[in-house]
Image (cartoon, rainbow, N blue to C red; front, side, top):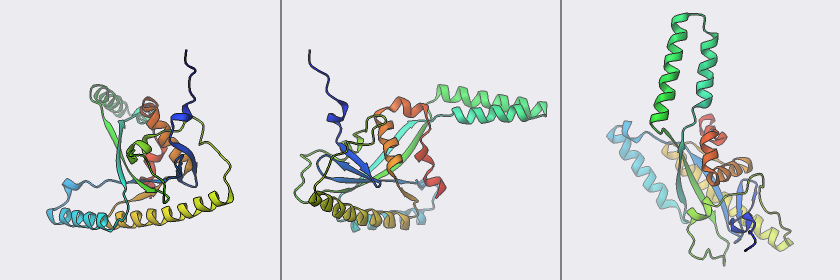
Length: 225
């Protein structure tokens, strides 16, 4: 009988530090969360302007970037709890009944129809010279997940390695700034995920059932900007 291998052996991530995902290959990744635009509600002129601005943004990039859409079932537990509290506080019997009927309608609708929440991300990479990914797509690296409660595997680095890491993070930071500026000009709100948010994101990617039961804190980030 083969001995079970530790989970971290199959994880591409070595550590998460200062908002940067450090891969075992030495490559670096930053993850940006981006708000959406209801393109269909825009006028034809506005749609053309957005399309042209997005095209210009892509043409300015001299590095690859991965655009990821994360879909999960919408969790309405907290919303229903708030409706229940509101019903208990209401003194008007008619309004109490209306709140109850509305809550039942929402609950039954979601049970019969899977309501999906979508979150948009941009993965900005930096690969040091001489680092090869062996043909792996950035999406696969993005989906690699951290074990629960473990933010990364800490290893001691030589001064040269530390200097190289700092230089790489500086280069990555410039790329992130370029992407944020480009998307902001299109009218999008962009948030760079920090260590805690990155850990939460990768954990929920690796545990999709947990993601459905618990609301993602990072989902509110762009709403607060």
